[in-house]
Every structure is written in structure tokens, then in C-alpha cells.
Image (cartoon, rainbow, N blue to C red; front, side, top):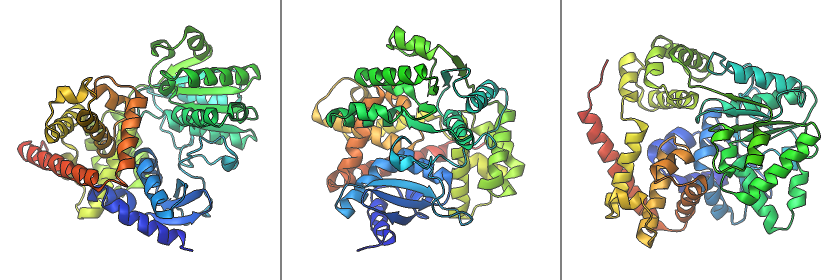
Length: 450
């Protein structure tokens, strides 16, 4: 029997030809197979940033590749390896949503605590409310509804609530709306809906991330509604996050809207420049060398979207310094982070994909559903998801206002096909080369402001 380390080496060999060299070097080169049993394969990664990126961006592809090599259905989990802690330290990702018996040890992200959260005017109310419900679950602010654009720290707050809840001897469960929907569909298929709902009955705090994902899923919303009512009637704390306020979630029923608005609704605004510098300073204490201290304001000025983008910029700069040996100075950071806006970048990618398939961008994002156009659209979704830090909703907006489920289906369709379709793999590699060539040409023409 092969060891986990040997199996993972084979997986890496296959992944290396399926993704770009830069992505492989940054996110997978330092990973190792740690252990596996009949259903779970654990991969060791060097830090939380890598674990989160792999969980969010490469999980479907990694799992399908692993299944192909092992010849059986197996789940994959990414574990942060810390030499100062035993290998059973908390995982940075839970594929089961934190509600199954496998998650009985409450494996929440160890870095997402209240102590590690930078608090300022942009998130002060959400932070105070989160601490209150963690210390006194069900007593006030029930439900607590936190909304913001992507990457502003909503998930961090949910995990922080979980850590404090558990330290007080109570039980908490975290799940994303996507995980909840997938488990519900499986429960319906296996005629085990009652068993699925019963998993939430023994908890004291339910932490439900990205509820907007369920907007167009009527049956799953109904199940969530019943679960919500059951927990609420038993005075169990419910904390929910979304990318907008309940009143803006169309076409949500008035009954569910009233439930979500029945407690406290708070928003998180994008951090200002001073706060972004504070966030970077807090992250650099552990994530990077202090050589960046003198140029934090350059990064904060360049990256003004959200907290996740700030963290992503740190990872990117760290990788650049490590792989190229470049010294991080205000000039090099300015050059590395100077580029087109995310929207312009996505439009360029869509144009390259459309040209490759001999389509117009209007046809690519339009309503046509013939075989060639659908394949091109799915490829575009896959490449944006793989190469850019974009949420499903952002991709959906760029592709004609399509919903989360449609975008997720397109991404998973291509990720699955890559394992068994060498022609498709070659085609995507060709498109990536064209994208990189377009970026290189554009960067040469773009002036750098020091």
C-alpha cells in the first residue's frame, strides 16, 4: 500500500500539467500528503493563506485528481502544518460544513479569532455584536445578520464566534450555504432529509455563511427556513452572513426576510487607508519579513478593495520575493501591484476566450446555448475562477448576470473534464498562453508610477 506522501507526489505530478507554473509554485510546491483513511485524505500546507486558497479555488480539481489516482471516492482536507503543534491541529477547511461526526472536535480556522481581528470604524459594530452573541448566545441579537461585499471579514467573525463559544463549553457548527445546499440535495436523493436536519438540533450556535447562495434554490431555502425556526424556537443563537442586506435579497420571500431582519442587521464597510495599513502591519508580523514595514502604505494605497485582497497581495508579494529573489522596495511593490482593474482584467480574459473559440464577447456572455458557445462560456468561468480572486457572484455579473449555481456548475464541469480530456487540457493551456502574452504586452506599454 502506498503511503499518503507517495500518493500525493503522484497527484502533484498530474496537477503540475493542469495548472500554471506560477500557481503550482506558489500554492502546491510546499504541500505534502499527511495521512488518509477510507474516506479522507489530509494534505499538509505551510500556512492558512495557502489552505484557504486551495480550499476556495482548487478543491474540485484536486479532489477529482486524487480520486482518479486512488481509484475510489475520497474527500480532501488541507491542514496547516505547524511544527510547534501536533499534526491534529485544527483544519483550515471543512468540506462537511462542521455538522457531521467527523467535525466533532470543532475544527475551526485557528487564525480566525477575535484577538487576530483588526477592529476599526469599518467593522466595529459587527465585531461588538459578534462578541456579544458568542458570550451570551440566544440572549440578544438573534439572529445576527452580517453583510458586506466579499472579503471584508465576515467568515473571520463567524469562526471567532465559534472559538469563543466552544471555549465556554457550548457547541457551535459552521457551514456555508453552498455546503448546506449540497448536503441537502444528497439527503433528498437518499431519502434522509430528517436525518440531515437533525444534525443541527444539538448545537447552541449555528454559523451560516453566504446565505445569498440559496436565493434561487426554493427547496433548500425551505429546509433552511425550517431549520432556522426550529433553532430559534429553542433559543439557539443563529449568525448569518451575506453579500447584501435581507431587504435587498430578491426574490426572497417576505416571511424569510422578516425572520432574517428579526434580530440585528449590521454591515461591514471597506476599510479606509489607515485601517488597511493596520491590517497589513498585523499580517506582516507573522506572514512576511519586516522588510515590508517601510512600504506598507504603498500596498495599502494600491489595494483598496477588501481585506482578502490585502491578504492576497501579501501572499503574492511573498511568492514573488521567494521565487525571484527580488527585494521588496516601494518601486518593486509599485510595479508588481500596478495593473488593470479587476473588471478590465476579466474583460480581457473574456475577449481572449471569445477570440479562441471564434466568438464575439457578446455571444460569449449572451443567451446562446449551442455546444461551442456553452463550452467557451464554461472555459471562461474556469479560467476566471482559477486565475483571478473573483467570487462566484462577480463572475456571474460579468457573464450576463448569471447566478451562483450556474457559475459553479460551469467551473466544476471544466475542472472534472480536465482529468479525462487531454484535448480540453491542451486547449486551456493554449488560452492561458494567449492571456499571458496579452498581459505581457499590456504591462510593457503601461507606465509605472513611483
